[in-house]
Length: 479
Image (cartoon, rainbow, N blue to C red):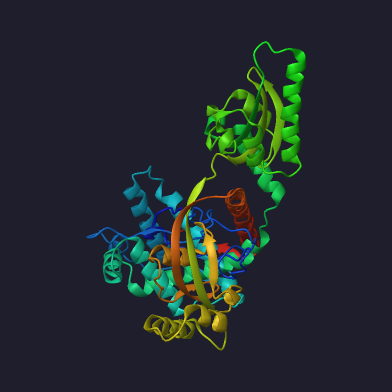
């Protein structure tokens, strides 16, 4: 998962995103498009779309406590958002944290007036989103906030006690930190509900992205695996011999196009060294293939057959077995997992669901219950009929909370209950492997990239919409 570290000082304590299923119908695990959403970069402030788990950098040990060091003065209202006030002290506290972050990063420092303006606009947008979340009945249980805080501590490789100690040094109490986490979770769930449902990615958009990548990419970065059949034409051969050899190559191509196995035909016909092994040349950089082969197969899809193609050596029949594109990984670490999902409801809180799953975990580890049986009986996910089995999946295919839990498990281990926007999960990692991605999996990875871009655009448009609908009155400027 790609993560961009941001300091706590920006209050971008972004929450954990969610996604919905593809083939296995594992609701609550994958994107609503049904195609998978990679864990993309997270934004900070108004312009980003913080969909995924974000690495939050805590104040360093022995920090200066910038927020606490600010001299307090009589507070006053600097803005009103739909009848709710934003105070000068709110702006000053957030501004101090932003200035500390800029100083720590060593970047060019904007004027205080510019920072204050940016902070105030962010507070306005946060206030609007929290109001919409409240109006929409969106709630975050204490368990989700606690697990988010634990995730922050793990990201910073410290205990929760050490995390709270460092926050206190920076003038941030535990209660205030938890409230900010809760607010970020609320805004995250609002964005997921309001924005992600708007974004769909068509096959045409995936194809266009790939065409753009191909046209702009360095051809030497492509990797191609070709099947090759060679019918040799002796040097100085008479025209009738050339025609006989061409006809032999054409017959071989016709057999393959007719559905016969390429490797079988290659073993029967090919006079190239690799013919005895089925004619496969192997995955290699494009610039290691003859230009004739590249030109002949440039517009041929995977599985397509080209030829006969004439060269000084003879006639060639080529099959595109595999083609990897720039920016699309050829291999990935995949996980095989299963889970039990309990959805929160008026009758079952997240805390109660977690307690029930903890009981299941104890029974499984004690040998008095079977994971698959419990999943079939109790899981509220589409994978229940398969005993919770989700099959093999690559990185970014599950919601970040789920991914993080898997990353911390060894094969055979069962997680503690994990909260996501879809409910509470009990997860078991069955196995982990490095695998070569199929063409379909590579297309899914491209679809993820395109969807991330569209999500950013949709989020920016949505923020403009809600900002335009809100009543915002600016009063005395912050000082």
